Image (cartoon, rainbow, N blue to C red; front, side, top):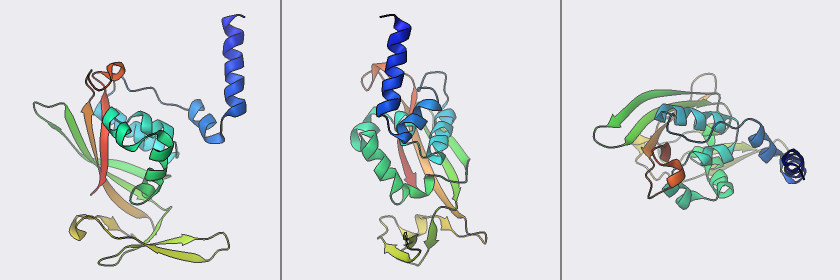
Length: 194
């Protein structure tokens, strides 16, 4: 068979067996990490994928150690959709507030502020509560215990009911011991709520 027919058949089989999320991922994928991407580019790619609920792409920019701790990508996606990261999925907008690189090391950190109207937070001094709508329209309140110190959490509720949350993105350059394919590429080691 010719290479064109083989490629056509492989695309048809992917479309036949793939889920709608996987098809969406295939159609609008940003490029793989490469040496030409700055750490800011990688953060933007992840934020764009998070806005579109594309966990496969978000996972693609995770460092090998991050992938080993949180993967495979389906498990990673479940973790991101849960607290405290769920506010990132489908967010309305995001802005990088601060960036810094450590001198002498291939490390980059930035502080990102995210606005989202997809979550309804009710904040108390010790135990935040999330109000979720059930399929019948009734509300269910879920509580969780805060692992961080109270003063370090940044969640505000502006008048327009959007939630504003800040997260730290931590990136490093991948070395050959971690992954020879992405050697010298910036990849995400972790994202942590402020």
